[in-house]
Length: 91
Image (cartoon, rainbow, N blue to C red; front, side, top):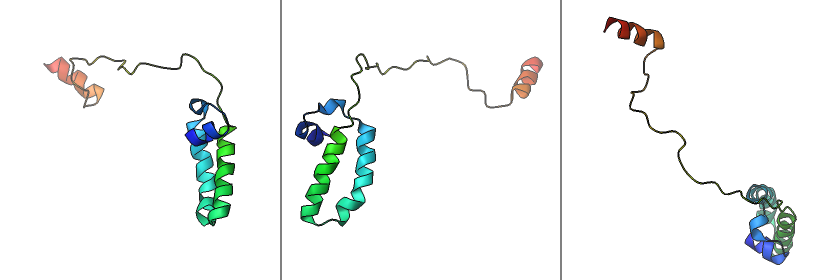
């Protein structure tokens, strides 16, 4: 992604990671089967395809990594609800 962005004047941080993986998976068999001159040509084509798939600017896309739910002091329900009700009534 960095090579594609810097080669074709596209900000590398604006390139799609999933799009890059998709294109790389599609180009990989051709890259492995090609000889050295053709491999360079295919690689340059891959970089061009990756660079032209930039995602739009999306400001404010950072999210904090926190847990939403707080742990409870109650035990987990490991029996069916009906059994637990009967057990509660007999206690």
